[in-house]
Image (cartoon, rainbow, N blue to C red; front, side):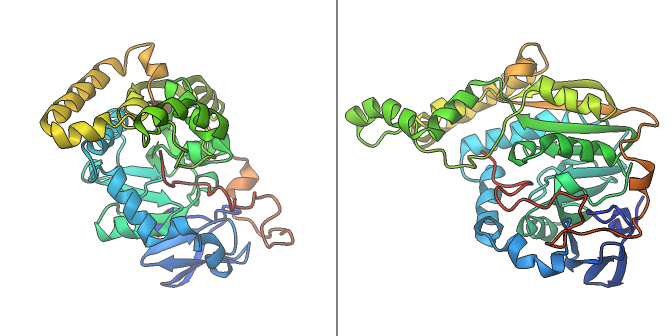
Length: 372
């Protein structure tokens, strides 16, 4: 067991060793980057974070108010449907965790830590997210043994650190999903597991989302409903991130296999039609007020059906989301020998980033954020 999570860390830019000159800072001597430690949470992006704090965290989605809104919605405190959806996602991922591989667990894109508190007691649990406010909320609730602010594409952890790595509904927000998968596999020990939960391209929700992202299609399809009901717009403008990119089972399977992962298996999660039928047509809202007991029973039955069908083909491949698990081949290694050693020097571009490292995206934000 690890006494302190700080010895798990490396520089996200060059993977070199980090020094800790004070309680409030980490430094990479090779890159000459300084990384603040805020309320015990190291902030590790592939740049000189101390100089770029305003740029990294000065946007609206990093605010405490946005973190509170996400926290309320994602953990199901707003509605009966939210509670059903929350438990559905928890079950789909936690069911695949091997209880013999939980000594060291990373939740990549942990947000406020909803999965961290569901992991077995005795595990050393690490939560990573790009939102510092989310992590502060997780810390206040005592979720996770160690919290880190960073990106999936530049994980600030040493190779082969974790027995199990999980990530729920994060990849769709990233501009380079395959690179993130490679990083998740890199920090997994040989024989360890990577378990991902993702939105599925092969589901009608993909079409529904495309309609709501198109002003022309929205107008055409909403017109008859507005003519009859005036205020009803089941195809209203998409209110979540327009940059999300959904994935398919076989696409992610290929990424995992290319990263020396084997034994790919998983299950489907969620039917999806509640998002594009029950809610837009006010069925969910009406029953929540008029017949909440009936609605709870309905979602309970839907949950039971999901658990029964999720592991059966073709449902594994075509439900709203899917979880996919793979085991790292013994002795596998994704990095070169040179990359695994602390860098002695690093050439930088005009903005101060190491030349070999991709600069962090400004828009869209690259790691765990507000999910649809």
